[in-house]
Amino acid sequence: MIHNSQLTTHNSPALTNSYILAVDQGTSSTKTILFDEEGKPFARGLEPLKTFYTDNGFVEQDPGDIYKNVLDSIAKCLDDFKAKGGNLENIKACGISNQRETFIVWDDTGKPLYNAIVWQCKRSITVCERWKQEGLEEMIKSKTGLIIDPYFSGSKLVWLYENDEKVRTAIDDGKACFGTVDTWLLYKLTGGKSYFTDYTNASRTLFFNLNELDWDKELLSKFALSALNLPETKTSSALFGRSDFNGLLPDEIDITGMIGDSHAAAFGEGCFTPGTAKATLGTGCSIIMNIGEELKESKNGMISTICWSTEDTVNYALEGVIVTCGATIEWLKNELGLITDSKQTETMATAVADNGGVYLVPAFSGLGAPHWDMNRKAEISGLTFGTNKNHVVRAALESIPYQIKDVIVAMELDTAIELQQLMVDGGITSNQFVLQFLADLLCKEVVNIGQSDVSALGAAYMAGLKAGIFRDLEHLKSLNTNKSIVSPRQSNKKIKEYYSGWQTAIGGNKVVRTEQTELV
Image 1 (cartoon, rainbow, N blue to C red):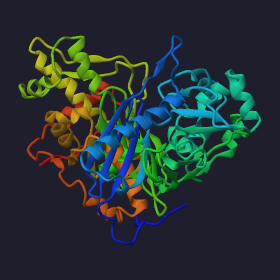
Image 2: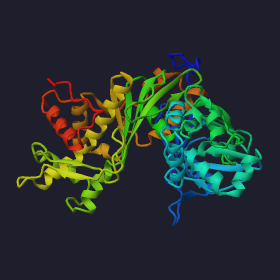
Image 3: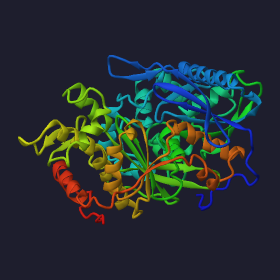
Image 4: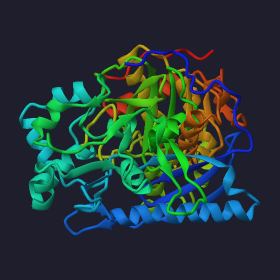
């Protein structure tokens, strides 16, 4: 266990005139960005990726397509770089962030045994139900920090083992290699020489022991996967291998960063210390809060995971997933016809003094953390003849900060660590009403670094630390300082009343404490 409190990876002065190749391999596309030594994007490449949604509800991708997609994205970025006068010899290192939980199984010759199974796939529901009936929930939670759910890689691999003879035979014969997308890309990019993953990706498999920071042999045995080959685990900032990216670069460079995309976003946003958190405000919402160097198990509906790690320091995190955020705004537009453009919502919300007692509980697909009520249905309460569409739109927007508040409070109860600052990214950050309401509700600053590609940035930070392009944590803090900060309004004394109304509407969730700090 690593307990050093200072993040120091390179003592010499930072390299100058250097660029970091950051590959952000996502579910729908791969973005490649070249960042300079100031952490600013200089060149970009984007390549869409095809996903197969089959009639039986399976979600898969072609492993070869993923690799080619990455190379095509890199090629576009390098063309952009050269067009802007860049010199390929100044590219010093590579960092990779990737879609989490998606995995590939290949044989000892490097040939995939099956398509990549995407994190969205729910094929292993029956496996998860069986594990719960076998009483494995507490054991899995205490070892891995995760809940039993098809979302995580392990249950889908067990389904594959039990339903595909070729995969089962390869695993039993000790000839099957398992890897999340980062591992597959590393293996391909290095011609099979490097077989590694990092702690963040490993922590999403249901195989990784958070206490020991290694694969858990007991769990693998229970899953009948003891003969499975697994990559060596490393910190996110480390030397993973070397590649010329199939000849796209004149010489090989070091791959010195690998990290799951949500963790990369947290690091890119600046969640360096306990109490700092990030919320990605998209269709849903992923919230990760740094809880420091001590692992803590959640009792209030959160997932324990790795936040980030270097060869000197490992920081843990709690993660909460909100099912519906921006999707609520799309529902207002597509199903109710209250708006024609999401940009209208900010003006409509501020056109009324408050929500008029109207609350929208956006449980269109159930409620996620910390409530975990997947049978809950969406509802609007508090309607009167005085209610107009502005009240409904405002209630929809307010539901986003309310849900984030619920998650943050649960995290604070789990850890006794108070939120210091919330960093935000995602499309909804353009809505100033949401950000101001969120700051008022949390009584904390809400910070937007104004960088849209935060996962790629986090991967670049990790790679740059190991490569010596960035000196240390303090150096990173000095980068990307053009931040937009929304502070709580001291005059807003009704926020406690508003939140109490939300708690009533949501059903008095026991996790969320009712006492709030008064705003002066």
